[in-house]
Structures are given as C-alpha cells and as structure tokens.
Length: 170
Image (tube, rainbow, N blue to C red; front, side, top):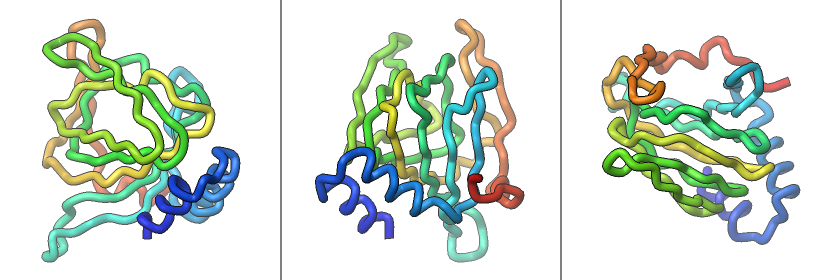
C-alpha cells in the first residue's frame, strides 16, 4: 500500500504542494499524535498499523510522520527501536554522532535513514513540507534518552497501544 503512495509522491513529479494535499488526504482518518517541544507543534505522527510475530506478540509498527515547517529538535537522542524511515515528500537534515562528533546528513525524497537504539541523532531542519514513512521494529527497551550537555536523561517508552486514545487530526 505505501509503495503505491511512495511511487505517486516521489516518482510522478508532483509539486510539494500537490504531494502535501495527497498526504493530508491519505492520513485524514488515521489516529494522530501531536508532539510539542517548548509549546510549539514539532510533528504529527500518524498510526498506520502494528505488526505481530505471528503468535499475537507485538514486533513493530508503521507510522507516517509529518514534520512541521522548520521543525528542529534541540537535543540529541536515541530511539528505543530499530527503524527504516523514508522521506516521502520534502527533505530534512539529520545530525548524528559518530565517535562523539556531530555529522550532518541531508535526507531527501526517496532517501532512507536507518535507526537503531545505539544511533544518537536529532532532526536539525525540515523543509516546509516534509513527510516520512517509518517502519519500526521493537527492541524490547523500556527507556530512551536525550542528551542534556553530556548527561543522559532517561524517559520511559510508551507501549504499542499508545495510539488507542488518539483521534484523527482536526
């Protein structure tokens, strides 16, 4: 399903504005979780589906992320999962740490970012229209962290059912 959407958005030559309308329509009925940083909307995460291990156990999920114009994360952090995130529309800059030093990577439409719990990064910039499809696998970790200077501050993760109270965006 997402492959057809990726093809329509990335390879059909739609303008970012046209692609944004496609994405707004595509996500209109999906449960949506809004993420705020310092009182400003930074991103919307749209829940697509959970994946199970064939025995009813949770093993991952798919989400679509809508980065808000010029969204940026101030702190480096890890993510408590393994993931492949592919930019569908727009572009973003991911800063990640290699041997403790920040490295920037520009990720454009059709490009992917591979994430694991040891990958420490932040999105330092997103284009005014930026949509990302993310397939996330469970790592079994119950915490993630962000860096406050050189100190790690730990945060509890949320479960696979964190979407149960989310409604479609207004």
